[in-house]
Every structure is written in C-alpha cells, then in structure tokens.
Length: 243
Image (cartoon, rainbow, N blue to C red; front, side, top):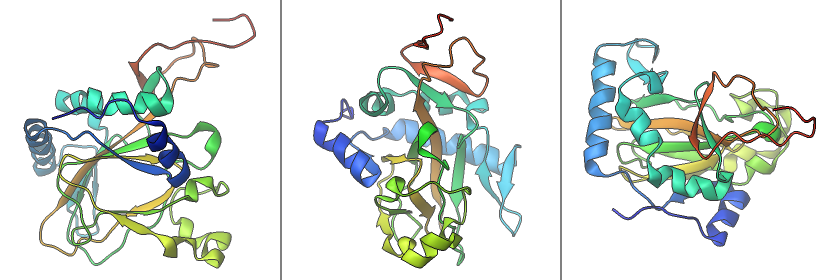
C-alpha cells in the first residue's frame, strides 16, 4: 500500500474550504482484520465502558486507546500522521477525551442527529474516521454538510439541526453522503455538521474515530492527562519567560 504522504496545497485548500478530505492512504488488510477482531471481542464481552442502543445491544466501545494495543498502533500509523502534519504542523497530540471510540452502526430505521465535535473554532480538532468496513448509502455512510465549519459557533454539540438559525436556513438539507471503502480514512474539521446515516442492511458498518490537534504552544509544562504526544514535541512559545 502506498502511503498518504504529504498533502498537496490543493488538498489542504479543499480541506479548509469544504471541511473534510478523503486521505489517500488506506489501512492494510492485516491491520483491518486485527482491528475488527479486537472490536468484536470486546463487543461480545460487553467490556466496559460501552454504549448500548435502545434494544440493549452494544453499539460503541469507549476509551479505545486503553484497550488492545492494536488501536494505538492504528492511531499512530504513518498513513494517518503524515497527512495530518500537513494540516496540523509538526507537533501533534492525540486526544483521549473526545472520540476515542469504535462504533457499530447496526440496522435501524432511526437517523443520528447532526452534530459537531467542537462548539467553537478556537480549539478545534481534526477528527479522523477509520472505516473498518465499507460505508455507503445502504449501510449508513457518514453524511456531511460541506462548509458548515465556517458557520458561527453553537452552544451544543448534538442536534444542531434544532438550533433556530440552522433550521431557518435549512442548512442540514444540504448534506451529502460520503461513501468510503474498507480501510479508508476520512479527515474532517471538528466544526463541520455531520452524522451517521441509517443502516438499511442486516450487516454492520464498523468504524473507529479519533481526534488530533496541534500542540498548544501556550500550555507549557501543564499536565496533559487527556492527550498524548504522537508527533514532534511539546514546544512552549509563551512570552512570559516561563517553561
């Protein structure tokens, strides 16, 4: 498999303009098989912390990075980190308290609500979705409203379609489905409106989601209990003379 590598200026512009980008690299089959096996093992065992649907079935594994080491290996694979360096710079953190989960999109007539992964632009993330199974309109591929990362901030993460100005403008009616192959990687701006589509099949649509951000160069020596450094270093550029 070829690596995603450094993004071109045109790809970076597309990401900043549209709010999402399909990365060129794909996870190899052996990695996909190990990830799927690790997820299904924990789903079958209902290994906490988990999220269940109204029928009581496990549909999400939380705190993924505390589970099988294969998840951290996937999160720090160069197929992911190399293109992220084009968007975030040389110093990158992997966030533990946003995303950090695996999802099983099961057959359902219910639709997920549109949401954002951050409420304001000043401390956003690049969300990366790892598709462990192919995702299309039938089994519930991700739906995105292009350009909504440029719209004003909101005070809620979920059900943004119920916000007055969002509903009045019919914003979520502009959503587009983003089909992805098994092994595909999708990077999205954390402010973009998006949701999981309904699964109309008898199968699953398995994915894992992680959040990345550039190192905050004003944080200094403060504790980083909720993130880990995966590229570069934690530099400090404050003008107070402190570390």
